[in-house]
Image (cartoon, rainbow, N blue to C red):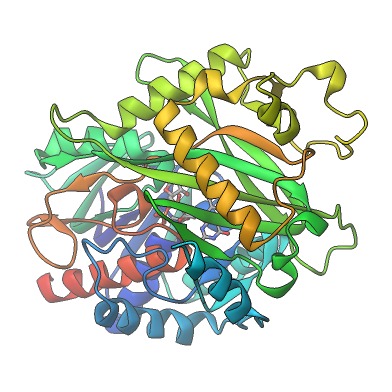
Length: 426
Ligand SMILES: Cc1cc2nc3c(=O)[nH]c(=O)nc-3n(C[C@H](O)[C@H](O)[C@H](O)COP(=O)(O)OP(=O)(O)OC[C@H]3O[C@@H](n4cnc5c(N)ncnc54)[C@H](O)[C@@H]3O)c2cc1C
């Protein structure tokens, strides 16, 4: 049986942070990283805009500014990001403040989906140079903590320390692992909302600030803005009973690509915290996702703001006429979002959109498209037994799937923090 000091499951930024962090701290460790995908490095394949300012990407229940900044400095010294310029931020901040909203000023960099792929290639080469064994296309199936082995779809592997970082897509897998190794967890928080797509001229702030982070009352925020050569995409999810549903998302290619479709997209999400009787955020999200898929004929729903304001559904035959003058980048189903989305969430998001339209006039142009659902259910909250995301004597978790991060840099930092714990334990 193959045996390693450390086995890392997941080659996303959390796994990468951990692998490079471990090699820096203890070069002699034997490390294996596996990923179920034949290519991967997880979510860095999409858009790859990185935020380097706390609390963006750092769930505050696990991170304070001091802890986050310590690891962010290490991420910066490793990745050498080139921060984007921001203009007129105070102007937008003043407008937001008058409405009880806020705009955070964040250090950002944007590689784009193409730039992200180049970075991934470099990182994987560097990993190999540093002696980390990388096995792509190998899926962890289960863990046996007594024997300190994991089973994959190819073999059994022994470990001294196991780090599981399967990302948001591995949410269900991580829950299965937690059941197997008896780690208590809750997942009572979920972000539900929609993705907005419009012309850049209707959301010109993106010329001043690539990914503006607005916070509105009632826990609504903007998130993951993409512009230039920007596209809305869908991510496929399958429930435990095998039913399919889709959540939308967005990405853009780097500024170096020649085509510019003149569009911008961003998410506007409301955080929902479920209380007594405590329900699973994942199950709630799945029900909403399935309802949207039912109404959208198996696809996400899209509606023009002009139709929404009139209280009528969008239809295929009217979708690109007159004022509705740009083509959606995602082939979603024209429909009626208010039939699918819980009214409380829709009300708060629409209120936030109206505030946003006062801060950046134009975003509620009739042609603006709202896509539903965009759901982020990355708030698995395992019971950690120390500050380094340890769940059992020889097992650690990190990254978005484990609730320790919400973005590339936070995931990388959480991998580093777990690495510190592993080094101390070995
Ligand atoms: C379309 C899209 C755009 C995004 N844009 C941005 C952005 O611009 N900026 C930003 O900060 N964040 C962005 N994100 C979020 C970002 O990708 C995540 O925050 C980040 O990747 C989380 O890192 P992670 O290491 O926790 O998980 P991931 O990056 O998801 O990596 C987890 C890895 O684990 C592997 N895995 C899962 N289960 C198993 C298993 N059983 N066995 C083996 N391997 C397994 C997966 O294949 C995956 O490669 C975006 C996400 C998407 C989907």
